Length: 119
Image 1: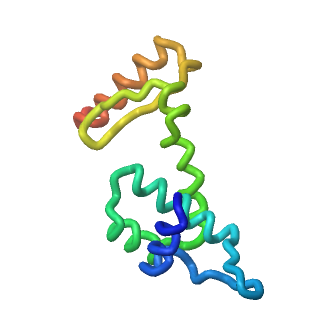
Image 2: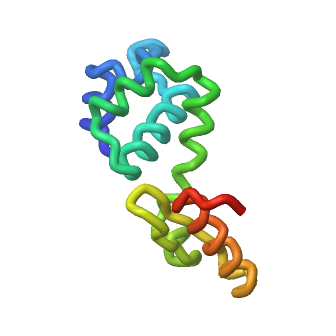
Image 3: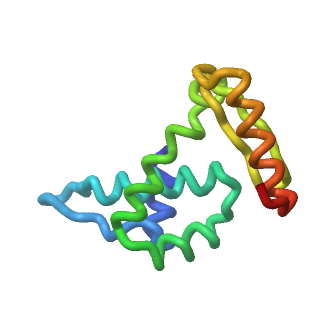
């Protein structure tokens, strides 16, 4: 992320106000949590307006947790795992460690849930 974006997000109020140490801006863990959350939400398809709205209402702990999900959007994670599209709104990512039989059972069970069938 470049500095121009960081400044823009700060102007929009998506980032907490910067702290100053002398005449230098200081970015804290809180700023990093917000930046990670913004990246996570943008990679999941949210618009800046939607992201801003969500961040305004989220507690800090939830913002930090959201940022932790950023790793799921990293290319190496995506390539190392298999992602199955179960519906327009549901995707399932499984690691290669999940046995083929269990994978089939999981997909079948989720398919039933999405169709509204009872088990």
